[in-house]
Amino acid sequence: QRPRRVFTTEFKAQIVGLVQRGERTVPEVVRDFELTDSVVRKWIIQAERDAGTRTDGLTSDEKAELAALRRENKRLQEDVEILRRATAFFAKETR
Image (tube, rainbow, N blue to C red):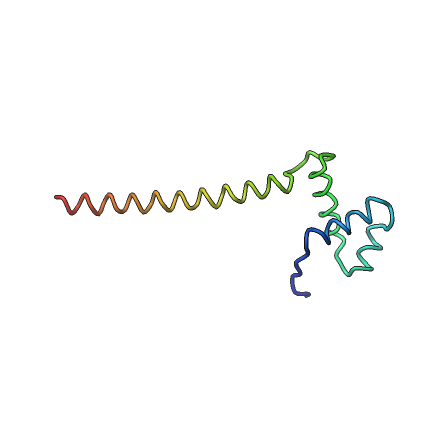
């Protein structure tokens, strides 16, 4: 099994562009750039969502916003838990 590789947004856009412009087919891109068929197709689908030609999922901006909101929600839940514990602690101290 190959180690997981990370690709830049620019590289993904170039690969998607090659396929969408008809310069190369997906199997050619997969072979020439040593990628997997599934990842190239995934990039194409995501590019179509971002361009607005597909509506069956979240755009990249929406995914980023959702991730940020989940991080913020987790932080706020931790803050509430700290305040709950502090309230309980100080309630004991004043009795």
